[in-house]
Length: 374
Image (cartoon, rainbow, N blue to C red):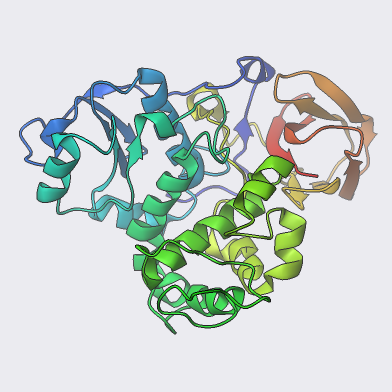
């Protein structure tokens, strides 16, 4: 599906006021009740026609919808209703990619599933690993990790092996991991070299498993999910560069891979909200005298630059809102001259979290999500 250069996502301010867990998916009955593997599930969500969430009956609807929302945000990171990488979309569809959600590791359901499932799943989730109130927070919500594992293993590894293949000496990913671990260790060493910053120590995790975990650490570090002090301290035995700034300075190879826009990896942390149906997409709303807002860096600490272009004189406003929809700063509220514009925003006075940049004129509005990580 081709996107017009002038198509814009119109997000109305009341959407902000809905707060967390605004998810526009419906839980359905299991569409495959007679499948030997899938018959153990009673709840189902079809995520963007390519990613299938199946859950047993004891998983609350809120948790099932949280898994679906996180998957959608990772696949459609700009939340315009279109999956960011069409090659990944096709691969996940062809593989019939499933995210199974179980009550626990015990019981017959998980055994029945894996004894009979021959499509693609990269991970599983259990009820006590899902916390819709703390999306992706280490120790509370494993949803981002397990969904990302599934998308990566069923999608990226297959579609882009030169970037993400998991065998030794096979990809940019494994080359970078060998540097991050201070050497190429096919099995877990007794101790890692002092210069290593990735020191995975699960003896049940073989080299390909270690590479998949490494990809996860890198993606979520860049998103800023791990940047609070408690998390940094808690994961230091395995992963040291826990903030985006540390990641950029320490792990240059993977920082370049993860942030390269051509690779289409998600850059923004999921917040558990996914509802592009509350927006309207109208090619006629966005006149040719404007170009898209771009924001870089994102995530940022503590300054970022907001860029846009105007071809004719227009009265415009540029405002910053917090996650609850409160206006916290007005950057522009007057006539804008033609040309390219770059507006710096210094968020030193604000706390970590998700914010929204809103550019508005009398005949269009564009809103983008940004993440502050100090």
